[in-house]
Length: 145
Image 1 (cartoon, rainbow, N blue to C red):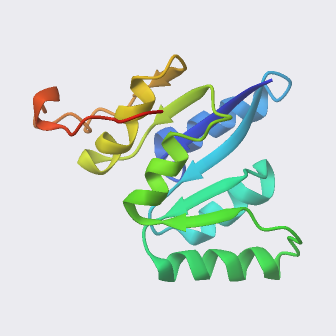
Image 2 (cartoon, helix red, strand yellow):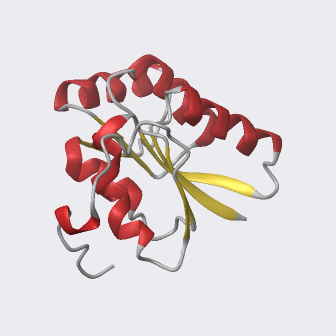
């Protein structure tokens, strides 16, 4: 089974990706999810897919997500991180063989750089992440992966 990490899981492209994963559950699993502030939608995604790692925008959203998951009866919470470091953790999760970067705008650009340099597959379906065009020379080196 191929494990997938998704940046922007609560947006349109992220939700469509999860629908494909659900339709092909024998072939794909979800190991990590990153979202912004939509704790309600992310809670449902975590309940359905049981990822090991989840990242959100802020510490407050992280606490809200943890509370929602506990209220839903989740005994073992996923690792819940926040901010750009959390997105980077999702993008570079060692078990993920596919990264889908569906995060809107530049917020999704930097976390996917190290992943794109790994041997794993990366999919960048978002239409807005590269506007305005960003040159690779503007980005910091990925470092070891």
